[in-house]
Amino acid sequence: MAEIEGARQELDRAVECLRAELHRLAARLTPAQDPDLYMPSDPFIVDWHEPLLYQYHAAARIERPAEHYDATLATRAASLLTSAGWQVTDDVTDAGSDTELTTVTADRDGFRVRVRIQRGYGGVVYSGQTPAMALYTPEPFVRPDPVRTPETVRGGYVLCDECDGLGWCPVCEGRGWCPNEQHGRERCPECDKDRLCPICQGAGKLEIAQLPA
Ligand SMILES: [Zn+2]
Ligand SMILES: [Zn+2]
Image (spheres, rainbow, N blue to C red):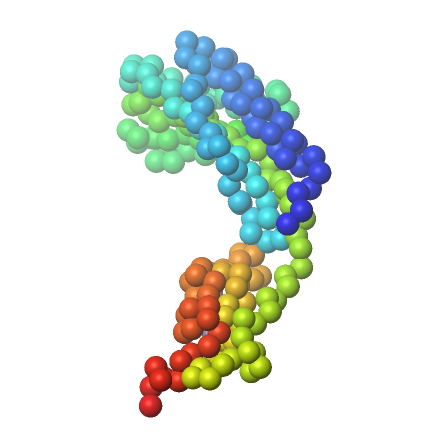
């Protein structure tokens, strides 16, 4: 896999933009507390079709006593984001109940920002994600050479009849996954990520003395 030039830097810049957006939003909505953003150090792979797409996620929870619950916070979040050019949607679950949960979701240029409040709870959850970006150019898969051939299998051994001497899992051919149209990749049913032929464990050959009669 070759790194796409500049892609990593672009994703890093996207992370900084996301951070800045979330802090800016929090500064307006919950000015007394700056969110302590949690962001895993590595991006998630969010699309397993080639080229794989990578995305960073960030989240922070502002903890406040229940009396800080403010039903207008969601409306204010929506209007702030709308006026900053975001496409905003509101979602209310369990409307009218004691645990009514309101989520404001905003999308812009591949970024997503979310603000979530729950009735009876003073806290606010901020979260967001960067655009999903390709970091590497896909390379065509090259089937590995067999570790054994009829010429290299010596006395007392035969070629493994499961993999014909490949040594690698004959189903995924050593990738540990199989291509899947819908999901991009799926777990290999034969080796379950192990990559080796489950019968010869990579040897490509089997000892005749050990074979069942
Ligand atoms: Zn396999
Ligand atoms: Zn084998």
